[in-house]
Image 1: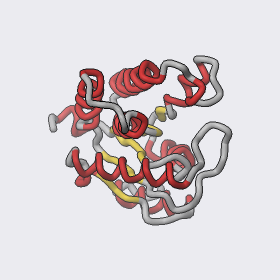
Image 2 (image 1 turned 135 degrees about the vertical axis):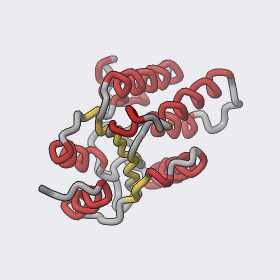
Image 3 (image 1 turned 30 degrees about the vertical axis):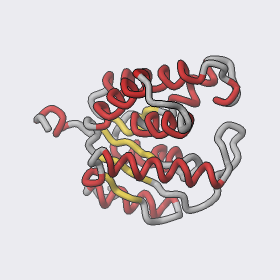
Image 4 (image 1 turned 30 degrees about the horizontal axis):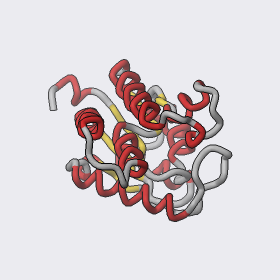
Length: 189
């Protein structure tokens, strides 16, 4: 890693829907003095006038838009903490294209997401510990949550990102905050 990248904090939270990423980010960002990158898929979906991602007719284009927005937003900031990442974009691409043949678009998408993931300094992975709450947007099916979790773990492993990854152990938010801060070696001041 170059000196410039080493001085940056490019922290991402990853995991299936409903595991507590957003709650954890909202509490960590002020303690770390980092800008938050929100879940961009949700933001773009709403900007396009849809309540749920499944309502969007051009799914392939939407997934491209989300990855492009993720990369553009991350590249515009020196340091950040992000609710989702290029890793999550790739995981969702895999899940929703599970029966499709590999294509130029898939290979290009993979390369863009993998290249961007190499720039993350720390990855916080949150495994499912409770059923996802229904917020009217996310999928709450437990099988779907397990499928996404498996794809996240596989991607972290395949892309050699485990050495930069912390797996959250606690279910409660306060304990999660403490364990992540300890891992990041900044303490709770």
